[in-house]
Length: 454
Image 1 (cartoon, one colour):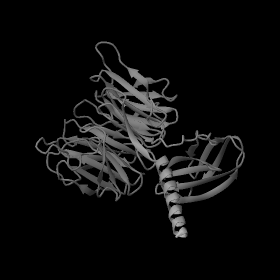
Image 2 (cartoon, one colour):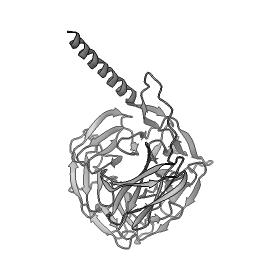
Image 3 (cartoon, helix red, strand yellow):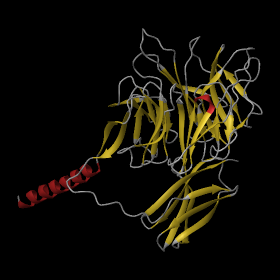
Image 4 (cartoon, one colour):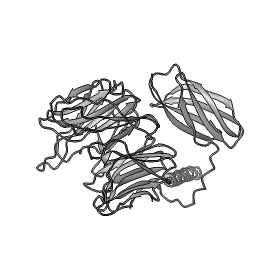
């Protein structure tokens, strides 16, 4: 009997210890309001550093807010209020592409850019084009595309602009020609798949089309109405590319007051947009709404946001579940995600949701000082150069994983030293795609992505 009591007591102690550990690690969503309304875009550099932007008070005042602590606190780092009559800019997209470089696209062809982490900003009108908010996308820290239009009939419409220096300068490239003479079309969304390789979604007189170029606009492939949808369908779409080959496209159907919903279509490509296959089509009202943001962490797992909800897939988009979390019913919802889980979600009504640790009985120890500084990875054809700084002397391990977490370049041990240093890694045997370089010293590690284009 004593032995039985001892065993039960031991099990109880183990359960209590497990419960305490789980409680200490438990996380929850917290919500705060940082502006009255008008958030229209979000971008994150990592799980701690994010920015949101938009127009406050009836689209009068342009703003950008920044957090560096995972969403707990926010401060306004950009304001453009102008004077009467107010001409504040409507922001379309934000991109935090390097530790100190933040870029925003706005209407009237303006680019708003900071190279010191948001302390100072420059506002440049890069093109005298049609005055609406321009969609902007980056595929790495240097290369991006800005979709434009010309307001002159019978000439080329959809004149994209490209940058190869992180948004400092932009150059116009040839755009796709509209098949109906004199009609005006606009690329409402798109993606930068790889340097020189862009894709865009447009609506026009004949329906909708997906336009794609692989040579900086010298030639365009147009697929008119590539999906079996109802005639007269209109609306914005949403692209997301995991690498230069694998991508998804979400398209909501036309708004119907009787149904009060946007049944959703999800299509997928595995060849860079040359062909698309519909993997999900929801025809039931109020079941799933058209995504305002969509992100995949690998070929199977993805998250979409819609009307304040978070939707999840574990089979590449063929089926979706809806979280119980509701930020604000009916609000436009934006997400920028790092790693496997969202950390910050923004709502058009000015609400921010962020993940926070639930306080435990014992205060958490202060974070240890990082021995490895930010790493910078640059690709030079057959090799990449990894530059970083270290505060300690000791052996370092460097390796490379692909998007699915598979080790494609085995660990390499090098002698470390305090201060700045760089390591060259042979990548000649790797195909095109996105990879992650990790530098580890002791228990500390840093990881940075690199895009390889063949």
